[in-house]
Length: 87
Image 1 (cartoon, rainbow, N blue to C red):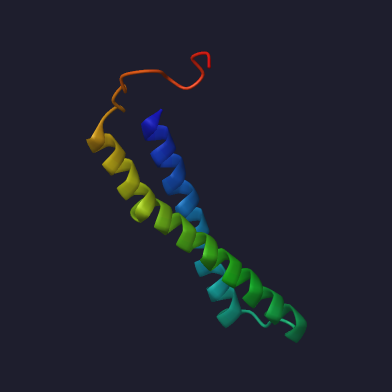
Image 2 (cartoon, one colour):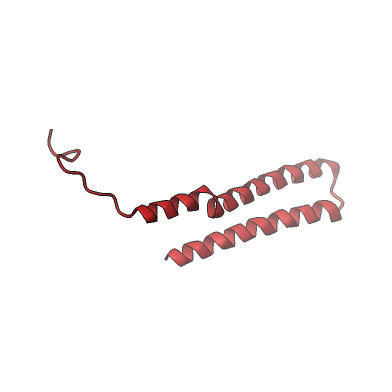
């Protein structure tokens, strides 16, 4: 299941990047009406933001935190009373 999650993330990331490239190509090659050009630029900004979020998740702090947690191992049991033991 871990591999499927990684593959799905890569596919979503790739789709977002392809969408961004497609919008940029459309802005340079197609003649858009003046009102639609501004909308296309806003959509491009949103898609680039999504791409940044995908890259940051896969290569940024989330992966570093995941590796750190794996290195630390399971949490140690503390001696004494646990929360919810009665009082």
